[in-house]
Image (tube, rainbow, N blue to C red; front, top):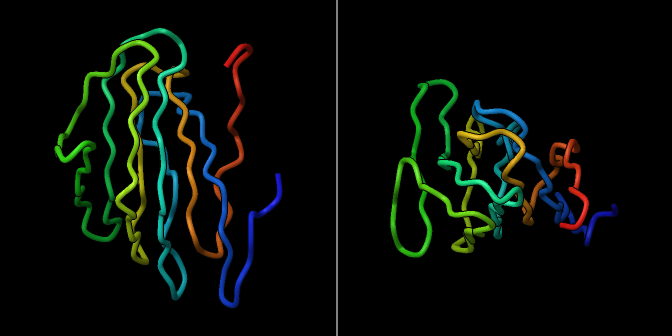
Length: 132
């Protein structure tokens, strides 16, 4: 997959990450001398299951989580319904030394897709499931 567009100092990059386990999975890492701007992302339950979902900005140095939510609500854990999709489209800044992380209580049931602006490439272990 190619980068959608580039500009001085960075590029727009796709987010495509399968949450394969039940521990926190890094989606975007703020590193170096800059920050990353997550334009939007979506968490999709694709396996017909009902996992609990946690979405957070994690401060690595201070071991502090800042929990996000969707649809004007903030939550630490969200019970998803089968085949539910949650959209995060407010735009999120990931400062240097922070991570955007997603945790699912059931592995291989949630995939995260989206777009961020920065110099890093997103994790590439996303594997689409047949029929999805």
